[in-house]
Length: 551
Image (cartoon, rainbow, N blue to C red; front, side, top):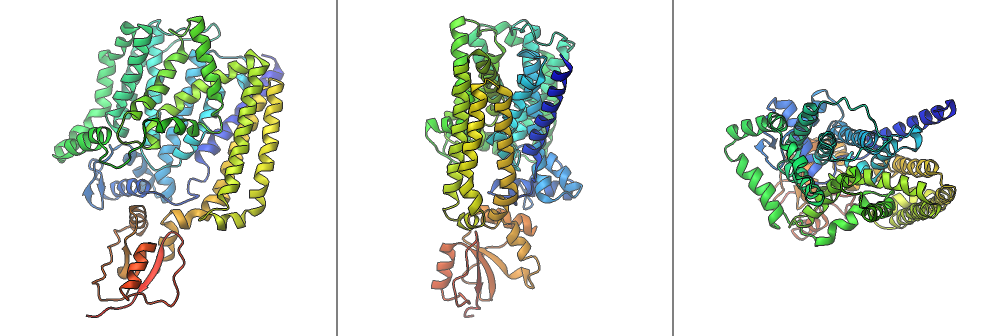
């Protein structure tokens, strides 16, 4: 490597690291905890830190067995050291996303070839593609176990590949790392340990996803003997040592734990529509495309690469095919579930980003027409995203945001066209590095726009945090109630008030401040209890003063 190449590689490495860190960690508190899950999981983690009970998850003092304990432990550390609530609750997911990004970069370096010029290598490209994707940016900011689970599955995949590589089941490219100092027992130990971490993060689905991915790989390649090596006693012992102690201890303290968690929150969730998340079989197809934005066009290159390997009959011992099994199986498996949420296929995202990044890099190298096709598709993606942003700012509840960002909203499509033109120019010159730099910088810029302008403007409409801050100094906190609010608001208000807010009853004879919905407000008016002269403004929640009723 020449001095100039070394300097270019170092600059590119620094830019990539900065883009990854901003994408995963920047302004985690831009918006308060949202949805029903974030405040609920954060409450449980905070309660662990406050009570010192690190075994039984509790929501409002009652055992809650929807998820295992790993996320609660990780977030409880943040609450224990008194980080701001949003940072304490979301940092575990951000660090998990970083671990997944590093893992797929390491996989690309060891199994898919290591270029002298790091700036053009999949080793660097794969982490950037993953970290700046919608899936990583969104779930790195989610106070949920999903990213921890996905990172554990990704790390398990990496170490499973190391075991299979030593068994000769995966092809080693000529320019791949030959310095294979990892002892087979260490690889087995880490494969089993990270699988156990996955079970601590979200339950037996970790074993199903990992086992299913390995099974379809072994079935397609007839490498059953190599696959059986993964069931080595060392791996099993490591898995049990990591996963079982908490399950055993929690079951001993809570006799109903295994029934509630294993059967109700796992088997019944998968086999029945009990949790009311029914979606059509094809639901995860568009979700997968959305998850990889703005890099979704790289999936075209992945399909092209798969067809090429099929024609050349070289896919059987390809590391790329092994990774593809880990990307495809979660999507297929959860497509058969009676309960579907976008987060279910997050374990596929790191593997999918790895496959897409390697395939796109090779497509640019293979022909100018491929480079132009992929760069044009990426450019069109940015134009479409800008047009969607402009349209969204004209719709409620974003109209206030549209007025405050009117000039930027109008400029967004023009800026997107400029970015698209730059990426297309890079494609025409087959300059893959330039195309990646432009796309990743655009992703970081869009994220920062959201962090500093969009999300704070939406806080009142999506999070209970500003409402709790506004009512914090109320003279009669015991007379604040909720009434017919969605559970999203109930969980959020309870977390930020640090107590469960009671539900108001029309039979309550005393005056009160009721936090309610449009439907609840209409019922209060019909009951003759509304004390105001004008309808209160609705910003996520209606504040309704209720007058004293007849006794």
